[in-house]
Image 1 (cartoon, rainbow, N blue to C red):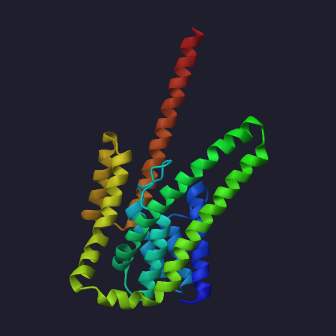
Image 2: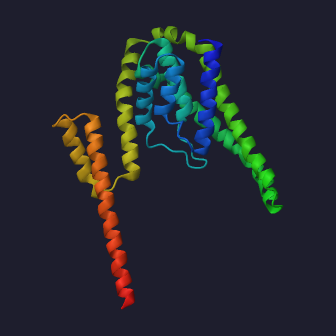
Image 3: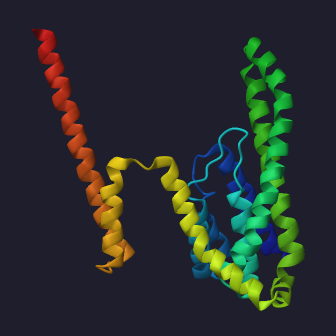
Length: 256
């Protein structure tokens, strides 16, 4: 791994970490981030596949205040880099990326705890209507976030990526096979977490329809997604029409 590549990867990780903190451009999502890292390493297709695998795993995970899930930015970056460097697939990416994501989870919690020290300063700035002081605290926090992500990504990538194939070769066959099984299970767990947060009994019929399409009709995922989009648009139009009719009826009753 060259120094330039390592710096570019760390730079992307730092910017994605800032976006993860702000949640604006969604560049921190594994699907996007894995593709970018793959392009930097000269293997875009593998980066895209591994990023999609991580996306399925972490689709339902979102940070809420101090409650931080495993960090998808560092997990994706390290997983993609080491998987491409070792010539292995998604199984290796998951086996290496997940521990780093948990490590970064702890680092982020410590970092956010440190940020709480600046709250009294921000309160004093607000009391004095010092908007520049508040802006300075915000920008300072963004710089600290960037530095943390940059360093956590740069150190293992620059020092360890070239040794990735050697490290993977040392793993027993049963460990590699176990990682492969985990790689197949983790996306299902990601979907189950997502369904657990947003599932409604009224939508069971759509889940059944999707299952039938894939299992018995053998439709490709693009066709299923297109049909699901049509159903979603139709459902939105019907609900919107019902809402308009209810508002019209209420306005008529008020007139009486």
